[in-house]
Length: 188
Image (cartoon, rainbow, N blue to C red; front, top):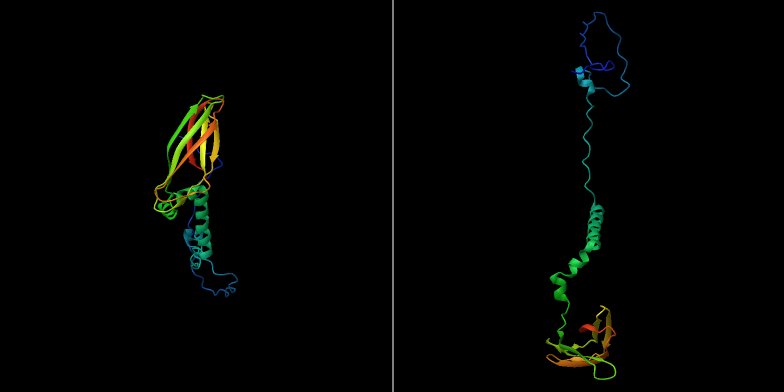
């Protein structure tokens, strides 16, 4: 179908006959100057000479493997491994869990005076088996515009015995936009 372009020629090879041995002596060949070359038998001249067996490649020493493992650990830690490790049960068991809780939180607005007042009441309790120091309380008031106002209620680091309760009450100004939500937590 397709004719080969005129500049391409198929390679041909011709096998030449060997000449008969001479009857007259030939002068001694000159001493070899280069290392011996492989015999040129047919297409054998295209083969690479066989190299001496090389020493097997080293698989890295202890410094190489230490650096590799350290690099992998750093990559794991930076990419979020620290969060995964901190959530493991090992870390949770080693950190003492606080037995303090807040319950019974109520809030109401008293508008009977000249200015409306927000009352927040509740209690903190120690449900653990040992005495705990009560941290300050944080009251968060969210207004109708979703602005959060934080108030801190001091507790003087009072110590609560096991099973003891600490009642609190606070009187706060009502935000101009009204009150949407009230929450009480331990200040951290």
